Image 1 (cartoon, helix red, strand yellow):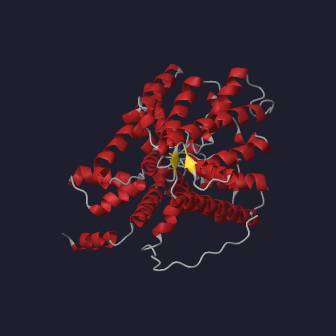
Image 2 (cartoon, one colour; image 1 turned 90 degrees about the vertical axis):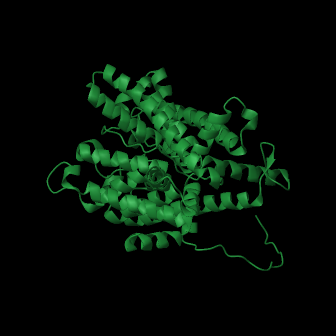
Image 3 (cartoon, helix red, strand yellow; image 1 turned 45 degrees about the horizontal axis):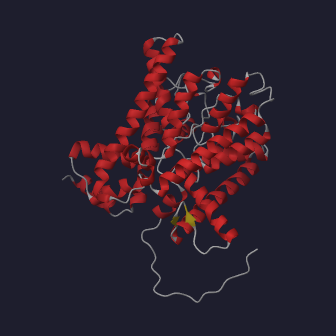
Length: 451
């Protein structure tokens, strides 16, 4: 074995699995930035600047969709291919992608690789990681392929050349399933706001990608036996369904008479756009209405949906619907005066309580702190700034139109938020810890006054 390879192997073996995942994302970000800085990646002389390339690469690999330049006109076909590759890598997870490639090349996997892959897809079954990753990639490619075929037929029927229609279909199918929100039109999907054959397949891809791979794989095995579903699957499906319905009702009602969004549309188109906005606010980032023209009430409602996000181990961001649901059941338990937290007939371990509360509070602290810093740097108002911060943290990509006008320092903060949001506060925090601290004794109990 060459000395350099041996040194690299030793260094990687000494890392925590979460640290390897962070390193993988940093590597993808660096390579993507370098590729987008090449002159052939952008239109015009000299190529893209470092900040434009860094922000776009971060937004793609973190499957966000925020942009500081106009994606369809600024980047060339090569640049679009680079963005698409980064979206796919970021959506499936760097370590999942790398492990599958290693399986194809070496046909073997060490314990460190299994731990890293298991951490990325939220699996605890180390013995089945190889088969699990194969199913994950196969499931993703099948969904993307089916959606791409439907979109290709539709765009071809709308008059696009067959090859152009195929490229549009593949790009947007991958972008939708990975909850990235990158589009090849300057106005995203506004031009198709009344076309259900475009919007609904994209919404389906976004929903499936946002459910999370554990849910998709379990539904594949146990679709006809819901009594065998795990608590995770049932919570994700119930919470996601409730949020989609409530979000649709909220956006349709709040924007019904807004002349800049739903006002000029017919009833059916209003409902379609309201449903699309509800789906996309769950970390996808496409928009079929002008987000910058929405009311402050709708912005705040979008903030809430973006912050909650999608399912765990999926392609979306946010604190996850399971975290939100667990917090709800914790509050419900306290209100009722019960001792243990019960969810759908099962009792939650106390470690899950702590994890949910930690994730939520870390996310709130990060969003509040970043919003205050951005308001200090450039005051675009609290509603717009908060919207942009949550969109970056939750890897959504919706924007009120201020991202491109922010100064470099503020854009770097958004890059950091996208990175933390993709990996998750807990993953990023544990990647900095080499080992767990074990306390050899317990301190006496005492409680302060609460409330």
